[in-house]
Length: 283
Image (cartoon, rainbow, N blue to C red; front, side, top):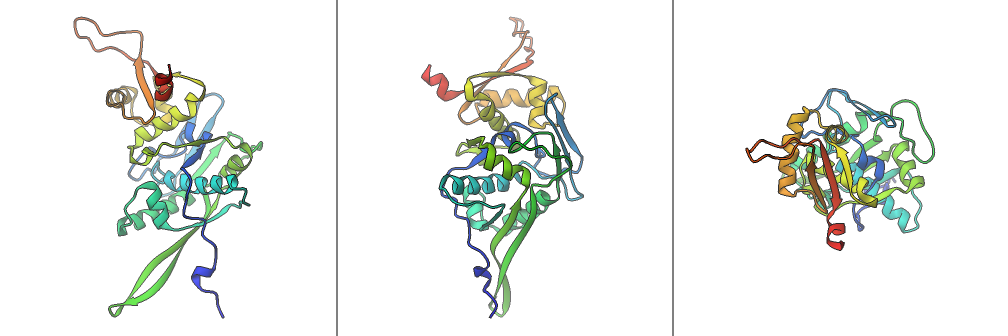
C-alpha cells in the first residue's frame, strides 16, 4: 500500500526560536535589492571579498526571496542548538513560513512563494568567501532542490489543490557556514516589516557593530548594500532613512567634511556612522 503524502517526511516546522542568520549573508550583497524582476548580472568586490550573481530569465533571487533562506537557516540553527542531527534537507509548511515572515496566507502569497523558490534554485552565485574552512570554485544556487507537495480534495463538485508541505535542499556553501563556522546573529523582530534598503542597512549594522560603532564610506556602503542607483541618489534616500530613525536597534548618522553653513548650503556627506542604540543607552 503506497504511503500517504503526509507520511513522506517529518516536518521541521514550526519554527519556535528567533530568526537567525549567517554573518557573511548579512554583511554582503548576495540578493537583488529589488521588489520586482531583476535580470542583470550583479557583482561586488572590496579587495578581499568578491561576489558574482547570475540571474535566469525569471530574475535573480531578491531580498524578499531571502526570507525563505533565513527561515531555513533558522530551522537549522534551532535544531543544532537543541542537539539534534542536521542534514541539508528541510521540510516545512508555507503557513509557518508566512507566520514567521509576516505574510498573509493568500493565493497571491502562495504564487509568490513558488516563484521565489524558482529564483532561489535558478540564481547562480560565485564567491571567494570560504565556508566551514573550505573554499570552492564555480557557481552554486541557494537551493539545489525545491519541491512543493499538494493534496487534492473534492469540494462543491470540483477538485481543490491544497499545498501540504515544501521540501528543499540547502546549498553546500551555506550549510557548511552554519554547521562549522557558527557565525550566527539574530534578527530584530521588525526586520520583515522593513523595505529593501532598510533591510540591508539593518543587516550591515547588525554584522558590523558587534564590537562598537563603525564608520563606512558612503560609496562603499552603497555597494555593500547592493544599491544599483547613483551615489547622489543613494545619499538622498539614506538621508530620509536616517532622519526617520528607521533601522531597528541601530542609529545611523551622516558625517562629512562640509557642514551646513549659515547661508543654508546643503552639507556634503561622505561617511556614515552606525552604532547600536543599546550601547548609546548604556553609556
